[in-house]
Length: 253
Image (cartoon, rainbow, N blue to C red; front, side, top):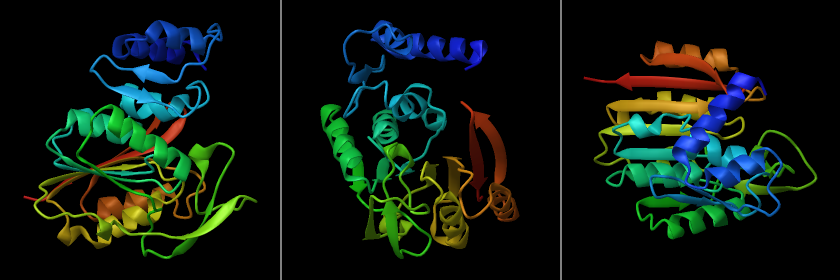
């Protein structure tokens, strides 16, 4: 990790976390006991199902650094695809108490932890769906990876299970004026963006998309960018913490 990036990370940890001393010791390899939670200065506690050193990105990027930029959004409907342990959904629901939050996570272990995080923080405006999201709701083979954050429906492993996927038709869009869609779905982002464009007429007038775009996605990022721009979205591509991200906005008058 370049020195400047490391300094920015440490600065963010100190600014956003109450237990920053423990976290920094953990990051430096000097903490002698396991650390299971991140305590944010805004009152949230994000708990991992194992030592946070092993799942650091699952907490830091969505809830500490807020790489998706959800805190600045005025959305009254928030969708989290690839919720993992619920860091983003917990953060988004807490910072937008009047919004409805829908999150999707097919991996049982981390979905269970997401529910524990919602309960611990007394989050009541989240609906959790334990299914993968696709463009067409087809049956898929969900491949579990050793790094469970990379589990997906596009690669094959010895540990995989057949399950039904869902489309975003599962979400209740009624009455929503502004949608924030977060994508961290390990390759499904391309087809979900296709669904979004195809169903634009029944969605809120204001839409913001923020997501990590994975290189193994069957639909190249350039193609999704082109489709979004053709549909009237303003699109920005960015690299954050060495990962590729896509940010798109559209507002219909």
